[in-house]
Image 1 (cartoon, rainbow, N blue to C red):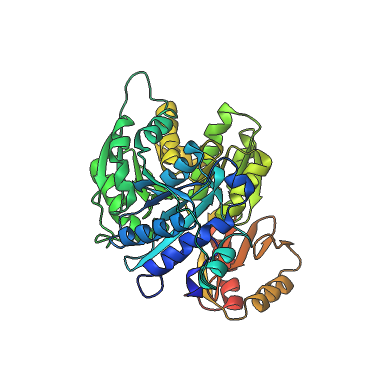
Image 2 (cartoon, rainbow, N blue to C red; image 1 turned 90 degrees about the vertical axis):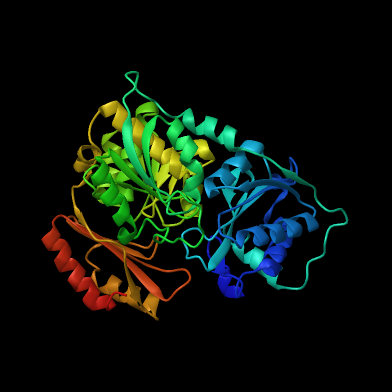
Length: 451
């Protein structure tokens, strides 16, 4: 069972690795990660689930475990992961659990956790503690079973997000193709239509088997249908959500994929107009153009390691207004520093309305460098390979914030180890495509063949 407990959540094959029995045990264990501050104003926990058929029995078992531990359950039903985070913050509960395997294939399920204020469950007092309690000796049950209530947060969530929109006075409509990938983005259909756009929906039928394509917008092949539809319909923008709709990816009006790091810079600049001088957090795989652009627009760029718990913690520590990750997670101070993919979409719509420019034209000033995609290598001795790279590139500026990053004036690279698999992940960027090709070839010769 140990393999299902990941760095930030729980995920595994259903029912062989993760099933109702384990979901109940995790429900019993969850109370142990809630501290006095979390429980000071009550012991309610928000619970919700995605569209997978086995999410229903999983959430029922989870609720049984939570109530057996003495926690009161607030069930918001079928919901996106950002809706769960919003409910935790909006309702002031002690925490929340979402039953979802996000972008993973149909045969997987999982659980995502948060504490009061939608703070992530992380560190030694997070997932490892849940694992220890859920897989150890049977946990005692509370003398008094926790309560249960069903609550709808759809309208409060809609009102909250729609308030961020700055629709033009002239009533100009934007044509937007949205690919929900048969995932939880489907529940946003009404909200998107209320945003004042001409919505062209792709795969807006809830289906946890993902019959059309994998619900992972980080893979370019999963954006092919979106790109085609944007061109066919002459749309202004294309948006793709992942399985639990906590990530989004963007395609411009020409059908070109826009890197999520570049979108981070654009959204950051838009927010900086409202609050100049604010901190914007970005993950260290992002293009150098991101920090440059944020600085040019009067902000303070803050580089952080990959992972939602790190980005959120740094946002809170610095009082930052926004953060973004290359994977398509967008974090906002105003959403309890939790990720909210739909708010990223709304702010992008504001940018298009306000400037009247095509998305490709807004992105163009950020296309300053040639950058590789994240490339995976299967490596058993990960630290040994990192040491080799440190020796080879010792004349560069080296830091170990996440794996190893080596920077030169005209190029840089980061190699970081996977938390759960025998993989190293490489990203590189250079001043020209030719230089990038040369440096990538050299790095591959040192690390091994990509997988």
